[in-house]
Image 1 (cartoon, rainbow, N blue to C red):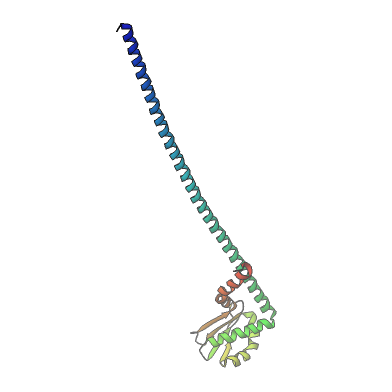
Image 2 (cartoon, rainbow, N blue to C red):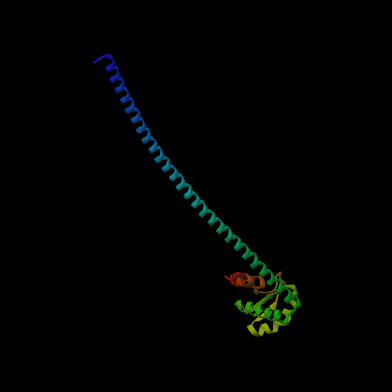
Length: 200
């Protein structure tokens, strides 16, 4: 084998080896590229999934917050309406009291009888506001007959209307004023007003 043939063979082998090295490098590069694509796709899916979860969590939180705020606004509006209705009721009672209407006088007598009966003592002192004093003096004989007790009129008190009853020694007190009755009936009044205004 001559020198020229030897050179050609060495050159051919070098070219073959170079081709194999290039082929292996291309295959390795393709594997690396494919792995990078898979990892990028997984990463993209993870990011999307996390973003969806976060968006869902944020959406649920915002919906819950909005519901809470709506409920608070509704309760506030309800309370304002109830208070306004109760204030109107107080105003109407005041008007009836000032007019000395028959309805108010009937209420005053009923309140006095209830209050006097709530006191166990034989002698009861009834206290009303200054405005109702004269009317109560006229009603006293009927109240005495109803309760079959000694009933006297005491010093006036600062109440909207109704009666406060006390035993003579002050050990027993029954507040049957308009304010006390409204406090006792508040939950029922709130329910009624709420039903009327909001359907429950």
